[in-house]
Structures are given as structure tokens and as C-alpha cells.
Image (cartoon, rainbow, N blue to C red):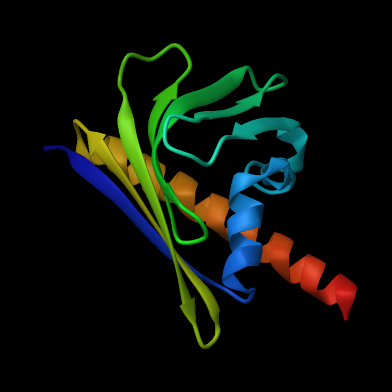
Length: 141
């Protein structure tokens, strides 16, 4: 077993809308800061590919989707470019009265420091997701 990062956020948007933000090219608009000029590919089916990269930052991550049940569950392997360690990410979405609860578990880190670093990273990503969907919601009002 390894150490895991666990992060949750409440998003004021419908379940299907959050799923689309996570699994389409819309991911490029919020996953990393805008200066990263993010490219992304998410094939949201078992055996599909995951690729999120930033040419200006010279970094990226790749994986294979291991489980997908739209619009509630996505799981994949996760490997940073240039690293041997492969970890696992599971994202669960649940409809709640206030919108959608997003829960990320990123598992398989050999140390608690690695898990803690990714917990911070996922927290930042999900904060950007909340802001992204809030901005889109306000634009429609």
C-alpha cells in the first residue's frame, strides 16, 4: 500500500456540467494556471488515454483510464514525464443539493511527502475548477 492524497470540493454546478469540465478539452481552461498553456486529452472510457501537458513549463503527465462511468466516476493511472513512479487517481462526482461534490483520491505514493504535495496540487486544481464553473455560470446569468 502507499500513501494517498484526498481532496474534496463542492462545485455549484450540475453533475453533467462538472463531468464535461473534467473530461473534455475544457480541462485546458482550468487545470493548471493560464500561463502553463495547457494541452489535454482525456479519453473517458476504460483503456482510454490521459495526457495533460505544458510546453512552456516543460512538464506533463500521462496515464490510462482504468474505470469510467459517466458522469460519476473516472479512474486512471498517473505518471509524470521523466519519472518511473506510476500512481492511481480516482475521481468521484456526486449530486448534492448545492451542486456537485468532487472527491479525488490519488494513491500509491511511497512517502507521505509525495501524497501531501499532490494533495496541495489537487486542491489548487479543484479550486480553479470551482472558479472556472462559477465564471461560466455568471456569464450565463
